Length: 299
Image 1 (tube, rainbow, N blue to C red):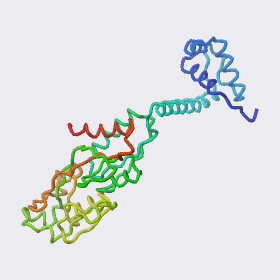
Image 2: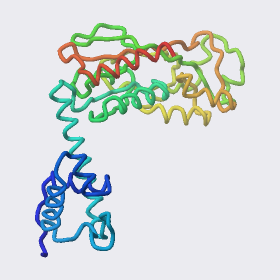
Image 3: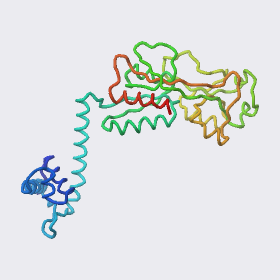
Image 4: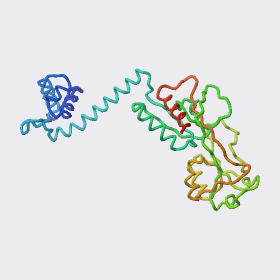
């Protein structure tokens, strides 16, 4: 037969059970069927595919043929896919989201992101997660535009219609520069010293904070859309700027960056808030993520 037929899922399930139990009788006991029914199902499957799956002649217990081993891999893939499909549909019936669109502020420490996403994967393995990383008001903008289900946003000190906010802690920002930078060499700087040097500033790609400045005192600024680029330029001595402490702690310990002593720019807490639309309350999976970020405040 050059064109194999299409086996049923039940035939594949019987095949996998025979392999897992090691015998037709074992498969019969596990599936609650007669051994003759198991043999008949396997015979029909072999007829459908046009190949022998088990060697029944040379051993007492059925052994997979070369063709059987090849079919086994594909059968397991189909069975796993069917299991995932059933779990996802079960979740939908129970009100579980099929996917969560998550927007995170770039300042959020890496350990908090990893902790939340690992727990999410273990608790909701059938829910697809789509992750975006943005800065400042862009996280809330994504939630407003329905491009994200929930977000972990930086501080927005204004009421935004249609947005609920839940505090999830803060991250400390500190002013830093390379050891060779004049502000680092000076030790304690007088007020206004930072205005004389290029300050590296993270750009907000949203319109929510248009016209606002966050901890910007420099009259000469370079605007960057990426925190990683800002980190790189700071280490190379190109300007000074505020950075989240967890991200640059190793650089401070190794002497690659220096914490600046500036009376008019001491850094401080960068507040973080979970946000979602009031007309779209988070479902079970999204609520789990918010609770996880809340719980991290105690660690």
